[in-house]
Length: 625
Image 1: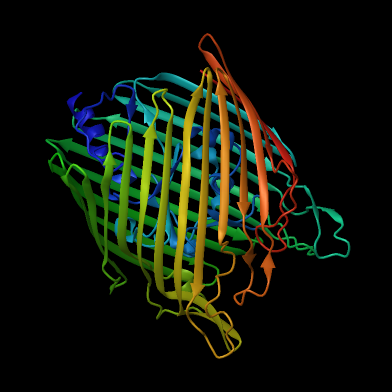
Image 2: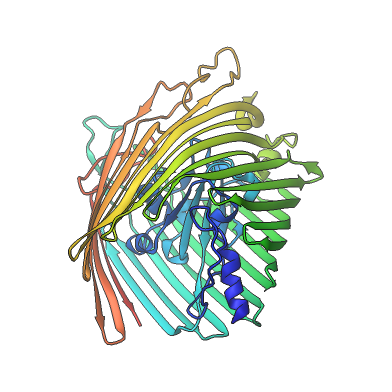
């Protein structure tokens, strides 16, 4: 038992506010397999999406969930189509994505498609806002997304079935079974999602904007996730997870087009973790494999495999000091229709969190990476948090951070035939941010939380593809300055038996090009395409006994679809609402939820001439034992 308590304590040394605790906790019910992101990111912003949202968006993609609930913007090319995340005005390739600690961005494309990630496949979702290359490595210039599984010990048998049905031929099913005792735990889940996507929309390319039915937009997906964990002794633990996901979809054409393109995506991900902890120090070993196989129009293939091996040594010599040293080796194989390539990467890193006094806490992270014999620029970061006000019921924290980050050129950028440029250098960014966090607890168990952050970032050597005669080729041409403001306020308040919960998020993102490619280039000083200056969202929930009702609104400001900002995609506002009821009969329990998306039947586009659905419904039924 001592080892199990140490395991949880070791990963929970820093709480979400950056303060340390020496409390011990019993691990008989829950085993935590992932370290808290905030442990070595003191003073930086992390958004955590709770289990309630994952259940509400069952049968939908993580892209849908993030678009509606995180304050972030995703470039969606249609319902169920490619969805790429942009954080703080950076590109989709400037967001690192991890599954159980494994980097899963495509090494050929340099990014992840969030439409391919079903919410049923993960238990925890967290988004780290801001540059974090020193913590996570390549790609994390704008931020990072972390997807994790979780296992519970001493739970016996657990069964859960979920069935959903909705508009436009939406049909989604999932089943999970788990068993655990004091020594080991296992959980398997299987899911299948399907949508015809035959919604109606106004065709903006035809006179009078006639109503048209979407065609060639069907999406089918299924997958399986299996997790296992063993407590080998009081001091050691072994866990593994495997995830297979396959998606077969038609590619929704532009308005006015009759294209009949199709795409099949298959992903296989596997990770093994071994953890040994004793006397306030520990070793963590990780082995992983990520394989992506994509077939476009049944003749163009893209297959990549990434193999990972990492080791970390972490210790807590004092209650107010935590530190770790690590090394990660990555081997990449790329086999595409246009080229074949291999790559090797080695990363050395260290992280330290120190609390010199009760009100002050800071983190120092260092990373040096090497790929194909070339050094990536040394990447440090320093962040901290100072308590301006601290009482039993209120606190006011000042946060600040400065960091460097980088992105290694993708395989496509370097080796695409014809046009690839092997001489590309890594993109690099330097950023700083500062902000305030405020929290207050009321005597009636209510609370309110508020935060505001200002950031500024300079990204150099930004890679763009430009025409070189009859060919297009990438070059390190663009420099971009990003700056903006992020704010949020939320909380809960009891009114008798009624519990009210609410949250508002606002993001102002300015991302302006600082480079002129030639004398005719009119993009200098202009906002990057598809980067909204403003995005606002709010939601309100009411809970009473077994009932819950919610309503939310998301406003996305105008986006420019050209580099010279001469063409604009209109802003739009989406309303969503839903009601659910929990029930229990003996050991059997479940829920029934009815959700309405785009309540006001808004006609909108996230990307120009990419149709999106109007008002639509979904009913979810869940039963667990």
